[in-house]
Length: 208
Image (cartoon, rainbow, N blue to C red):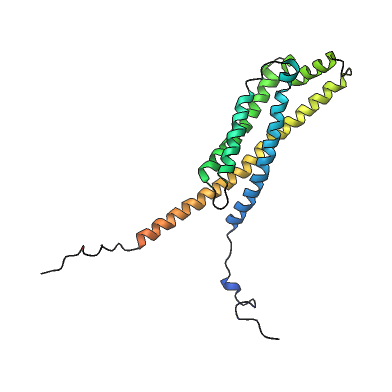
């Protein structure tokens, strides 16, 4: 049996390229961010649909608080998918997308505070939906109100949790990417300073 060529038999272990842990962490964070961003967008769509229930059952104007959520959802997804092409990511767009995820989480908690502490209970979606279905004769048991409240609680928790986890993974990736960009710029600057600048041909005059 012929021997394997030198360098492929395991003797080249000291010359193998070692991937830095930071790049492995960036790959994991990017995969997690991509998954969590999709989950967060889907859950936020469900939340917006929940806010729109009174529009269909009572034919009223939607709550103006849904418009900031809609802006964060649309602009955030545009920046995220435009900033994540094949190959190198566009860091400024990814920063904007991460910032909008953070804004979504902040708006969510502000909305919960306003919804449960400032607005009257008669404006809550659960009570309005229960009243509409009860008036139309679709339901009669008060247990349905408890079911609607439980569904709303689960939805609110999912929005807050998905936005928080998405921003955590997103922020870690952006921070590592900024470090990589800064180090690359420093290396390029050091390499440019190390190369001697030669005058163009004909710039030196001959001595007479």
